[in-house]
Structure formats: structure tokens, C-alpha cells
Amino acid sequence: MKALKKCLDKIKPNFEKGGKLHWLHSTYDAFESFLFVPNTTSKSGVHIHDARDSKRTMIIVVLALVPALLVGIYNVGLQHYMAIGQDVTFLTRFFYGFLSVLPQIVVSYVVGLGIEFAMAQMKKEEVAEGFLVTGMLIPMIVPVDTPLWMIAAATAFAVVFAKEVFGGTGYNIFNVALITRAFLFFSYPSKMSGDQVWVRTAGTFGMGNGTVVDGYSGATPLGQIATTDAGGFAEFTFHGITGQPLSLSDMFLGFIPGSVGEVSTVAILLGAVILIATGMGSWKTMLSVFLGGFAAVLLVNLFAQNVIMEMPVYYHFLLGGFAFGAVFMATDPVTSARTEKGKWIYGFLIGLIAVTIRVFNPGYPEGMMLAILLMNAFAPLIDFYVIDANIKRRMKRTAIAK
Amino acid sequence: MALSSKTKAVLWGPLNKNNPVIVQVLGICSALAVTSKLEPAIVMAIAVALVTAFANVIISLLRKSIPNRIRIIVQLVVVAALVTIVSEVLKAFAYDVNKQLSVFVGLIVTNCILMGRLEAFALGNGPWPSFLDGIGNGLGYGWVLVVVGFFRELLGSGTLLGYKVVPQALYDAGYENNGLMMLAPMAILLVACIIWVHRANNKELQEETN
Image 1: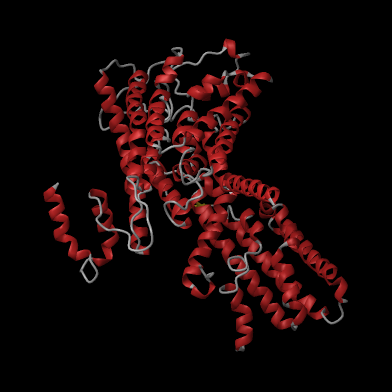
Image 2: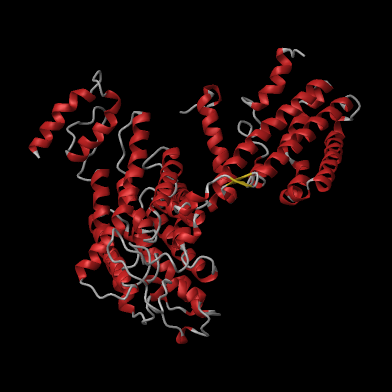
């Protein structure tokens, strides 16, 4: 640590005003403040400091994502070796998943951070920390087989058009990771939906080569129920990729085909506990997303016409990106509603719309992404009316006092 | 033929600093609707340029005899007549393009650029400057359409004017056409990019930031 600090201090004069590499000052500053606590203090006015700065916030969110990521990585290996009919050890599965997911993480970070650094350099600003979380979210919400160049293109698009044009971290209207996914979803639908993309069947770096077994089908549970021709939910069973029936515990633990981060509800709940305990995510938003989903499912269950309308509420919560979206996407402090009452409304509507899209639109078996993006657009409006109502209430009170 | 500086401004202004699409933000609807391929974009550009130019000339010739209170109706009649001619010509000689453009040929009537130029320019100027103004605005609208159409067809279909330009080797290597380019949202983003570049190069067009 000391040697590192010395090294940084030694090269520092080059980046100061008048130094040879002054034009790279933002980059230097980013690395220095990433590694060490900066010793600058506020110069004017009154400031309140506490231990929570945006760097720490981002790191905690990334930590909260780690359980879901680890289970997701293991699941990639598990599904793969199941698909090619080989029985291997826990570590082999994990390592295969790791090799599959790592390039995506690297690409997402390199492209996103590259643009962030270049932009900060051009605007002569400090590099903002916002992408640390986004870069981790992106590989977790796309299918494991998404080609790397698509992730690169989509990340570049999202960082520029969803974030930098609005002014950078903290000013974006829409969740950047979800814009990345939306770009992929509408640009390359064949790689983002259907039943071919959720399980990696090819070998990775020479590991796990093999051919898929007979009877293999890579459809996600939500995809299966959206396309089923069963007469009712009682006749319908979710099945895994080799045709074995899926139990509720499989879905809860995350041993089902799906995007890397979203499969394991238990790991997501662990992340939720971390977020709530550290005060990073709002429990109100999370809870209200589930409440909204619950209300919508109860309603469609009452008037059920087909299998997906009959699907009980706990399946909705366990399958697809519902839990992941509720915990990590809806609670994004920049794009969600900021007033406390607003959070309830915002979350409730996300759950409601997500279930509505799932149930009524056969083209989109998953509605969480679209629901959150739509509510991102409405979040400022919700805040406006919550504040407006508060002002009116207090005005009334002063009128009575007079 | 040497043009005076005023006529030059009338002709060239709409192509750049007074562009109807990227500065005045008019005619966006059709700019989004017809630009998924380059060919209809070009045809649309020519059609609008011709209609604007000749409508401008006709209204300019009539400007002293049109009663002020019914001028919009007269303008509409003139524009509608011209658009009908364009539409019939397209049906006769370029039926496929006409089908791709569908209702948007007819909707040239309601293009805000047209009515705007008639109101703002043709009613107060002679036929020759009005003609140049119409051509200038039509081309100013047109080049934006062509640029947007170029990128949408190239990235969305991998073709230009129907000819394959993205090599097969690239597809074999895993490249895919971008489906979002074929949807209207991407067109508005492309128009936004053109505006971005244009404003960056013309500081006087930038809004004051506070």
C-alpha cells in the first residue's frame, strides 16, 4: 500500500497544472481517489460529511450483487453440463460459468469506463463512479450467450445516450443498465429472446466441449408458460432443460435457465438484505414492487382465461427478472422516485405493469425491464405531485390557523 | 448567373443555419416515417423540394390577389393540387417506392415546412426568390432525410439503395443487422445526433445555459 502511494505521489506532479501530462488529469484523479481517500476538504459554505460518499455507495451495491452473480455463474456451468449430459464436480461447473461470464464483465467495464474516462477528460471533470454498478449489472441481465460485440455496442449506446447526454452520473432519467438491455432487446431480438440463448451449449476456451443431449430444450420457465398449449395451470409443469420437472426450490435457489444474475431469488434476497441494512436501497420501493405485482396477479387470477393468467403469485416472484428488478433496478436512487410517498406509488406501479406485460403480451414473456423504464419516465411526475400535495396540505393548515 | 448575397442567403440558409428540420425542428413526423430505407428518403426529399418550390412560386404570383382571410384555404388548394400531381407521377413511374411511402406522400400537404414557407416567405416575396426559398428548404429537409436514411438502411438492413454493402464475411463472423434502426425511435435519435453535431459546429445556435 505504501509503495503504491509513493508511486502515485511520485508521478503526481506530471498531472498537475503545467505538468507534461496535465491533459490526463481526470484519469489520474480517478485512479488516485479510487485507491486512497482524497485529502481535499470543502472550500466554501457549510458542508455535512458522513461516511457515505458515492464511491462507498457504489461499492456496497456491487457487494450486494456478488451473491446473485456467484450463484448465476455456478448456474451457467450447471445448465451447460446438464445440456451436454456430463456429470462434473462443483468446481468445474463454477469455473466453466466463470470463464463464460468473465469476458462479458470485462467488455462491459472496459467499454463503459472507457467512454466515461474519455468524456470526463474532454469536459475536464472528475470521473464519476456511477458506472461501477452499471458495468456489473449489464452482464447480469443479458443472456449468457450474448455476443461480446453486441454488449460493447449496447453499452456504448446506453452510456452515451442514456447518461452522458443528460449530464453524466446522477442526471440520467433512465436506468443505464436497463437501456443497455432494451437496446439489445430491440436491436437483436434473436439473441435476446427465444429458447436458444439462455443456456450456453458451446465450449468456452476449450472447456466443456460436447454435444447437447436428446430432448434438450433451453426455454426459460416464463417462455414455456407463455407458449404452452396446456388447458390449465394444473395440467402444466415447468420443466428444466433436459425435460426434468422443476421444483419450487430449484426456482428459489436459481437452478433454472435465465439471465446470469436474475435466476437465484435467494441470492437476490441476500443482496436486498445488504442494501436495506446499509441504507443503500429503499425497502419501501422493493416492498411496493412486490405488493404491486401481488395485486396484479390476484386480479388476473380472478379472471383467468389461460394458463399464464392462472399462474400463482409466487411463481411470478420467483421466475424471470421480477426479484432482481425490484431489488437492484427499481431502487436505483437516481432514476426512482425520491419522495417517500412517491416510492410507494412508483414501486407499486412497476409491479403492476410488469405483471400486466407478462400476462397479456405473448411477445414479451418478461415485462420487468419495460415496466421499470416506463416508470423511470414517470418518477419525476410522481415526485412533483407528492410535493405539490404536501404544499397544498400545509397551505390549508395555515389558512385555518388564520 | 451570379446570385446576389440576399438570394444566396435565401437558397443556402435553409441548408445550414436555418435548416427546417434540425434548427426549426419542423417536418419531423415524415422524417421519422420514411427514412428506414435510403430510396424512399431520396424520393421523399425530391418530392417535398419540388412541391415546396412550385407552391411557393404559385402563391407568390397570387399573393396580391388572395384575400387575407381565406389565404390558408387557397394555400391548401395549391399544395393539395401539387401533391396530387406528385402522387400520380410516383404511382405511374415508381410504384414500389410509392407503396413504401404510403400515406406520407399525401401527408406532404400537412408538412409544416410547406405551410410555414408559404406563410413566412411566399406571401411577401416575388416568384424568383420564392422559388429559391422553396428549393432551399426542400433540400434542407432532404439532406437530413438522406443522412438519416443512409445510416438506418446501412445499419438496419446492411444494404444501400437495395444493394448489399455489408460483406457476407462479416455476417459469417457473427455480425447482425440492428433491428432497432428500423424502428422510429432510432430515427429520432439519429436526427438528434445530427442536431448535436450541427450545434457543436455552430456556437451561435446553442441555447444559453444557465
